[in-house]
Image: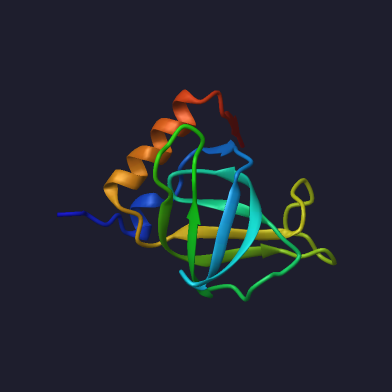
Length: 123
């Protein structure tokens, strides 16, 4: 049985600088490709000019280096960083994405990657 980690358990996790291809869309069949800027076990930041409204639910998937299978889950747009009025000027235009249905296995995959693959924590 696969356990699902709820969004409350994922908040407040350390973010790491990670640049990987992120595929996102309304479902698994209609995906756009962007790139991550940072990642934690609770979510990631995607660099994109195609901003979606906050609370938009989407499918995200990505393959971490050295891992055989991609991580895939439902997620939501937690916040946006627009070009005209950025909330975080140090980040490029993009969106903060919160994982909603991350399995325990995928959470461990992300955690192991972030802590063992020379990823740099960001604050």
